[in-house]
Image 1 (cartoon, rainbow, N blue to C red):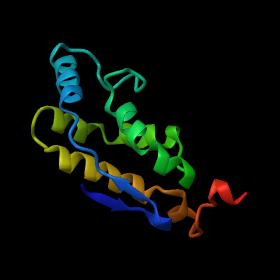
Image 2 (cartoon, one colour; image 1 turned 120 degrees about the vertical axis):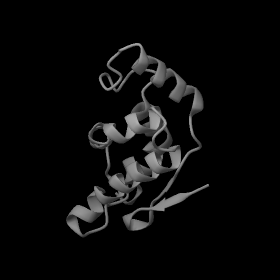
Image 3 (cartoon, rainbow, N blue to C red; image 1 turned 60 degrees about the horizontal axis):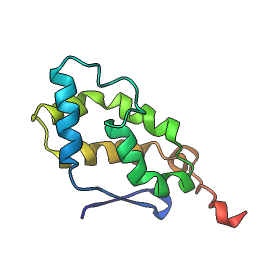
Length: 118
């Protein structure tokens, strides 16, 4: 399993490719549905990934809204993965890198407080 190191010592594990989810999203794309809207839909990769990474990101001060913004900004790469021009490892590692660069600890230069320290 590949791990992305985040500032402050947090680590994101890159999950295995969600093949069933990919099939559902690709079918929606081919049927002409606007798969980019409604990030709360059951078939959305952003919701699925948030479920995977939330335990790491939230304690570091990176909330769901910020995550949704990053996923939305990265939608071209999502589309390329869905149509087969990118492999899963390229998509998910690129997205994890974007998340890592937007972590609050990087923006302030100071570690994000751990909620258990309060």
